[in-house]
Image (cartoon, rainbow, N blue to C red; front, side, top):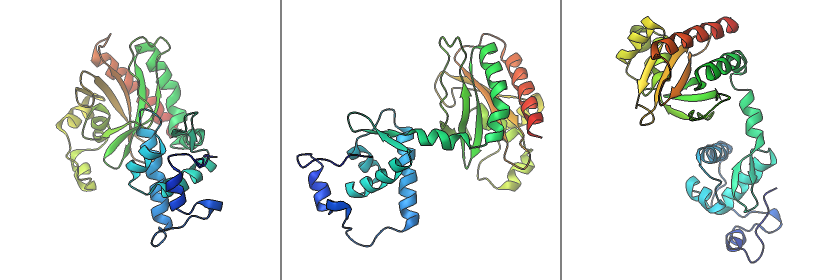
Length: 260
């Protein structure tokens, strides 16, 4: 459980003003709706997942834009479900419960993709990953780094970037014709590179998401679902990008076969 600050803590005045003694928290004004409380809890998890280091209660409170007593209530609930934990300094970071939840996201796609990701990562000595389409972003679902990583780039699950930047987004668009894309009214333009990717089976990008980094990706067409992308990221390719692109297209086709 998240420990309550002691009487000499710099947080004591916050808790006292919140009427936290005995666990009865006094609220100023009307209680937040269940939907608002849920939204704040989800936002707290997003903030912690995006943070490079564990956050203090004060930092998380400021990022949420709520009273410290509200932040404590949210964190107690999240901690009860192992979604957050505290380190020895009392800072908050994501908990193991998130890993359990993550395993259930696109479970079939993850299972089908992992062997191919391992094969690509180790044969190409590059980080290989699957990106899924989430609203107007690409989000890394699962990634595998090569056993002999050297200078291989990391691609953490949960990393997101706009669908309009980078090879994964181009690859996802290439699963559709321009007419099909426009009919869906996504609000995003159909990139000319997606037309080329439809013909060659893979997309390429450089400097679009991270300066100096290149990416290659092929679409994964998922029955009754949005397409995803199988991708690699690298700074300097050891092979011809066209050859890597063909490897990606072949791996994507094998993943699609597993999903049928």
